[in-house]
Amino acid sequence: MINGEKKVMIGSNNYLGLTHHPKVLEAAEMAGRKYGSGCTGSRFLNGTLDIHIALEEALAEFVHKEAALVFSTGFQVNLGVIDTLVGRRNIAFIDSLSHACVVDGCRLSWGEMTRFRHNDLDDLDSKLESAPPERGKLIVVEGIYSMEGDIGDLPGIIEVARKHQCRLMVDDAHGVGVLGPTGAGAAEHFGVENDVDLIMGTFSKSFACIGGFIAAEAAVIDYLKHHANTFLFSASMPPSAVATVHAALEIIKAEPERRKRLWENARKMQEGLRLMGYDIGDTQPRCSGDCWR
Image 1 (tube, rainbow, N blue to C red):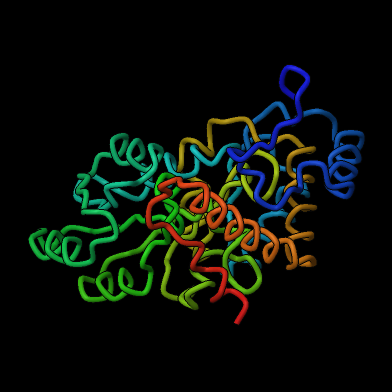
Image 2 (cartoon, rainbow, N blue to C red):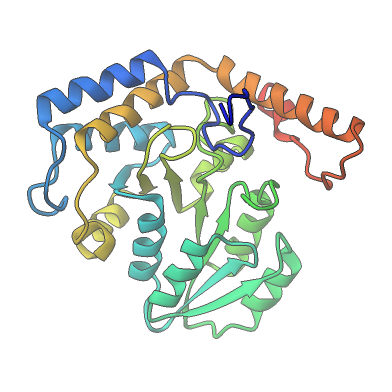
């Protein structure tokens, strides 16, 4: 309600409408009563509870990776992961429309940052070709680009990454929960889960809360657990938030109709805006048809 008038919020990231789901609210309340309002410490000290570990195991299984690590915010995930993995002799290749946390992670690291034109495989290939072969390389792209609304060309990027023997990290903040047959994100949508080295996701969109995670091989997660400063020196997610996310994850897996409704609403809104004369660009809810094959 604004000035007594009912309005429709179209700028929210509450994609699946889970912020007021009864199971989500109940899980948050029960966790608060059992564990208290917060952990008052970092994950590395006293801030790891059994529910943190259970959530990480569930997330790893959900996105088809060996292990996962939960951070207090999504911004901290990219900041900590990129800073930790991109060393002094390494290069991070990022899309020109990458989120600020990806850019800041590169700036914080001791490595070099190289941008390539948005979703332009030829430009990425050219920049990788000109990079010193002895230097380590990490490509960082997004599953869905938040400002443009388009989907990253993961199959094409994977082909380029293989050619140049690069690691690939996908920031899937806006894809996890809504893309793919089970909602596991852009990698699942394209069927390339095994070809993506690191999958990042946030809890402030489809999961109706706050926080974030990174999923990868167990050895990589173990390394990040002991070296990522944003994990080591930040207070852990409060119990109510952890329980909220885990409950949301179970709903995402159990209620695929929520994703279907989301894409139906997206199509309806785009068609309606066009009929009203608005120029909404060329972004299409193109994943909707593919998701329900």
